[in-house]
Length: 235
Image (cartoon, rainbow, N blue to C red; front, side):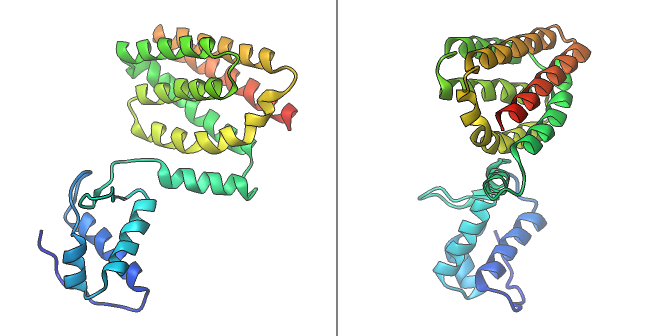
């Protein structure tokens, strides 16, 4: 890979290196898994220290743009939710957005997502949903496992939609939402609430597997209305 020497302008050195790498990715149309200029190439071409280059690599890794796994040549990272997860989680922790606002956004996304899953999902997707449904029932009394498999059910629906952006956004929203409402699941009516969730998921599963997009949409809407109401009560 040939790299040309850029014009250095006023900004921090690590910012210059970061922007230079981004420009290389864009102009050369590098795909996920492609190598970017190495630490050695960048230090020689840009005339900066290894520490500056490493700082730029680290910043791009945090943004989910580069994979800088230990001992490997930096590569373009595949689509992932890491940066968005950090933003959403920080926003909840600092009370800039609330759990019910995240839940409202998720409901908007998932109502559309479940319709697409009904239309585009494969038999393998439907089989995975059934397996996850069984796991949700199996871990009924285990708080953390119940939350995990609940989230996995929704993620499989997102994957079945055929649009990777749904998976990206739902994964980013899942972690801060779980942290915000987890404590509420210890309320006195915990078993009733868990059973409501199981019944709602079963209704969604049946409609999706029947490829009934309208029915699946209605089932998902009902599920989120119940979830939002439960969150309001818990708060």
